[in-house]
Image 1 (cartoon, one colour):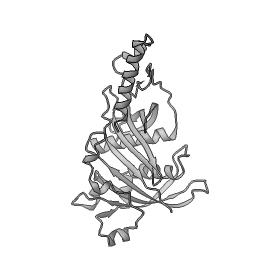
Image 2 (tube, rainbow, N blue to C red; image 1 turned 90 degrees about the vertical axis):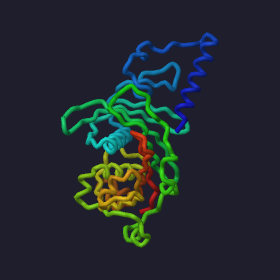
Image 3 (tube, one colour; image 1 turned 180 degrees about the vertical axis):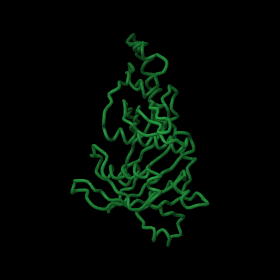
Image 4 (cartoon, rainbow, N blue to C red; image 1 turned 135 degrees about the vertical axis):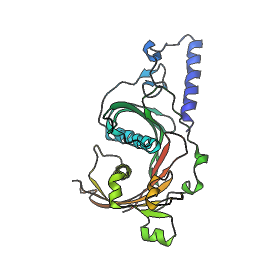
Length: 282
């Protein structure tokens, strides 16, 4: 997660070298205006820097990143902000891809619409096709994002290989601390549909261009965190979700029932959340 800092250091070195040889190119004066956030409004990974222009697109993957950032903010702050559409994004690629997304969000309580920013680090592996880390999620501002994930703050239980699929009967036999989500709770916690959507997106090799028609059939939550009531496990900072769902769309390739194992961890920093999806064979 330190790649961004290394990239900025290299940029400063490159700029100093260009200036030494008389090849320095000044940044556009507008880039120095107050209110422009690094990565979100100005891409400083290149030289000279470039403004990130508003395009108001509809790319589905960018929308997923934005929606995950909103969920992270809602989880931290107790809000219920809703995704409108994304305005612009930029990608800084190092060993990983860092995606800076600016979007329109709405507060259903006040009805206000406002600009929202989220920074997501995207990675994957053969056994975990989704490894997404939200590193910033906030109402638009110009402050620098804290892009350093504190892995030491995460319980070792959640650092092992992501578990394979298990039914709740198998979890019970293994004496796991689990909870079967009630049907009424699915609507109250609509972020479970977002997690399921992300899992299905990875299963289709990231080819989806629009939200798919999915029907959640069962969700089981496993966490080490102690809770007085079973349903409070949905509020755990670190948890593993076993989701059974069905695709009801037109594509025969993906029709039918599916399973997903999704792990969520948090390092205690505001705006930080890590989502992993295991590769599963239905």
